[in-house]
Length: 223
Image 1 (cartoon, rainbow, N blue to C red):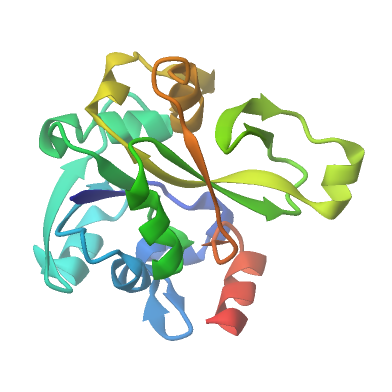
Image 2 (cartoon, helix red, strand yellow; image 1 turned 90 degrees about the vertical axis):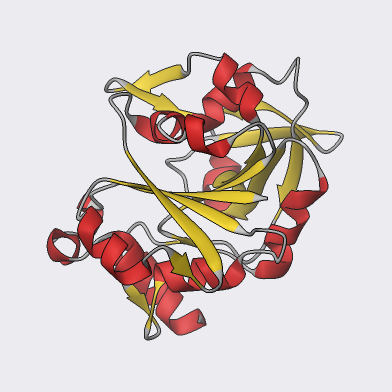
C-alpha cells in the first residue's frame, strides 16, 4: 500500500525558520518531522509519494529515493492549488488501490495510523481547542459534514479534521471543491462524495500539527 505525504507548502506561519528549511525538515526533539512521519507509518506501507515544491531539493537530498526501507517517489505540485490540488498532482503514480494521505508537517502515532488501513474511506478526527477551524459532524461513526463551532466547542474543543485520510482513485472523479483563494480543499472534496463513498471516522488522540511556533514548542515537550 502507498502513502502520500503533502509537503509542498511554504510554511509562512513559521517564518523566518521556513525561509531556509522546509517544514518536513524542521526538527522536533532532535529529529526532522519527515523522519518521525516515516517511523509512524504502518508496516503495510511499502512505498511513499511525496508532493514537493518549496525548497524541494533539500527534501530530496535528505530523504533520497529509499528512506527507512521504503521506496520514495517525488511529484511536484501542479497548477491546481490547495490540499486536493496537491493530491491531484500525484494521480498518475498512486494507481487504483487505496492509499494513505498525510500532511508533511503533522506527527502521528503508529498505532493510530494503523486504524486507517481498516476501511476504504477513512477520515481522521481529533478533539482539539482550535476555534478557527470547522467542527466535523459524525453520525454512527460516519463523517457527515462541517459546521461552525458553537461557543461551547470554542472553549472545550471540537472534532477537527487531522488531515489524515485513506482514499482511493475514485476521489479523482470529482473536479475538487474550491474553498478560498483559488485553492481546492481535500476534506471538502471527500465530503462531496459521501453519498457514493461512505466515510468512516477515525478518532485519534496523538495527532500533533506543527502549524506555529507554539505547536513546535508543544511537540518538543511531548516527543
